[in-house]
Length: 507
Ligand SMILES: Nc1ncnc2c1ncn2[C@@H]1O[C@H](COP(=O)(O)OP(=O)(O)OP(=O)(O)O)[C@@H](O)[C@H]1O
Ligand SMILES: [Mg+2]
Image (cartoon, rainbow, N blue to C red):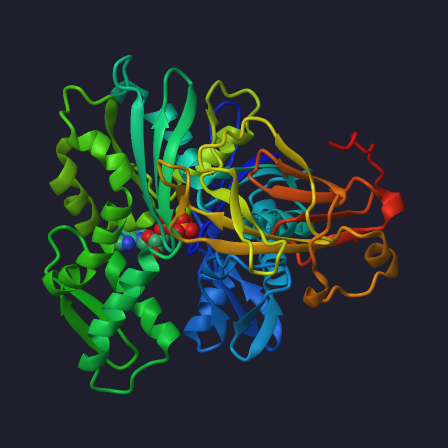
């Protein structure tokens, strides 16, 4: 069976491919009620991990649990082994995710699916390579066949193109997807001429979502509690439920705690949340400039709002204040990403989307241990991902040891220099000296010195269609090679015999 799975910060949503339809699976909670999601939660009960609705129930009963694992995944330094904590117990994040996804498989089987489960997986558009790597590996380890990985807002764009094609016409073919979920915010400008879409640009924040609204409410509630303050997790859960109960006519949010119900005026809550929505609006400014210009001239058909947090009335209200009637809310804001992923998994669907890397990567070449530092952009956020890309550089080294520090960044300026959050994601140290290579001893930074007529070096980078980056640095004179998939624990050192490459003529 072919599936799209949106592993969200708060909800895991599964849509299947069924002869041109993409039904969203429903899952039963502990009381037998149906939901179109599994809560993305894990708890510990008697030393065993339990997941989903069972974890939600265990956490309500006071057992230790973990919410928002996806936020920990967004750490640029994440690897399969990065520990996360459930109460006092540390668990490698990769193992936790794998165990959670096995639970998802069991639930899918309860839905009547059998045979191979082939899946297209979503990730936030601005996910670092480490997050992509750990996510794909965990899906595979759990037993899924991974068909591909698609950026979440691009999947939402696919779903939009299926649902809303009538708002698009030959003149207005572009849509901005505004996706505010539980833990992340993404906005993408998507061009939808015909049935094949293309992501033109995308921006986002890995640390803005419904969880933050819950915290704002918890901070308003805490000073008003007269009985004992419940543990933070139960308080946040109560706040989430109260927040989800707010309708456009609501005057108060009622936060139900074990010993009392705390009433918070919606106006006060909304005022406190205003800065959160403003953050989303300011980060999408590069895209929304296109909309603010003369509507008659703009080729942007509108803004499509998806993600559960757009159900909070404040959010569409503030977005409409800026952009007016071209703002549309999705009828099923929490499922549109999963439906889009299922469309991507359907080989017979005429709808497709071409993605971009959404973030760039480059290298600091530090051959003189800090005295000489040059930055080289290897790929920027606009790189198209319709087929794997290989970048190769060859040069003669001026040092006996090469030090390469790779970073990811979200955007480059007009002049091509990276701006904003640079995050390191790998360091490779390569001996470019036969003696050092042979000895295999750890390299001491004090050993670096300039050389005349250094070895020839080849750097090769491959970016696959899910946005994962592999790097290999090869000493062409000796065949010594070091390669790594960014986001894996450490670079792999290959013995010289493992990879021999022809030596180019000197000069
Ligand atoms: N009616 C509602 N009013 C306000 N917020 C809501 C409502 N329904 C759901 N939410 C919030 O939406 C968020 C979940 O949205 P969604 O399922 O789109 O996120 P996700 O996919 O799990 O997360 P992400 O995409 O950030 O990884 C939660 O914070 C939830 O509380
Ligand atoms: Mg989501």
